Image (cartoon, rainbow, N blue to C red; front, side, top):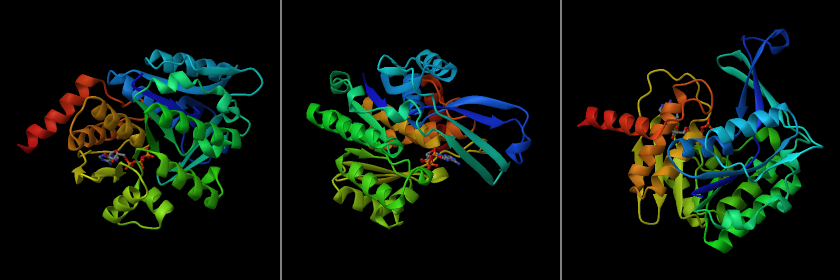
Length: 315
Ligand code: ATP
């Protein structure tokens, strides 16, 4: 495997109308999960990915397994739990600037994941282990599992990539800050947004934040800046890579996961730091142009054409 990731994916329901959800008569169903989004993004770019998780023995779990494996992601380490349901959530579009998310995930199958669900050899054979700050917020056993997965990766020389993905609804703030800070310190690569960096370190200046992460023990930090692109920081290099212009953002959710997939794909292809961040920016931009978290994730020929088009425009 190139990248193994661990986390919960849920069925996501969105009313087919805006306004108060209490009046909704019909909903569209999609799947939502940061980690599986990254796995799908990498798979579309031709990399080998595996997703570790647990789903309920129900229609949503079955839909998930079939969709995610259909995208070329290895789901052989996803367990089916007969005694807990697959988590679901709703995205209520009250107005364009008021989107509310309601989770029904407490006690979900994935929240019962524990270190017993980890296959050491499976993780040890990967090049990268991708984790997010969502999983340790789900339950004590999930937090322990993430710690153990990181320990396995460290023992086996697998690089740990951590996206803090702060979800304030899932945590007590202090606990969140402590856990995210600890995981960042153990990770080789951290992919925060400015707001997440500020949450962890109380600093919002990108260059100071980059330095704080490096001093914290991280080898590579990429600070995501939305439309502006991203800053790359390591001991050897600090560079800001401009984002791709997007005429109209249709749906910004999932851009961060797309970025992670594009950036990791660049590292797997041994691109330079600038080129890897550029690929991350390109995937992130393409994701914002399409409705849905994974629908806009490009295949390899599309990403190359998209990047070349911009570079041709510039030169
Ligand atoms: P998410 O909403 O998925 O959690 P995030 O906050 O982790 O996203 P963002 O900074 O919003 O991350 O987006 C990730 C990357 O996607 C950016 O660094 C950029 O490359 C690209 N991107 C996001 N929004 C835009 C945009 N409006 N125009 C161009 N590129 C964008």
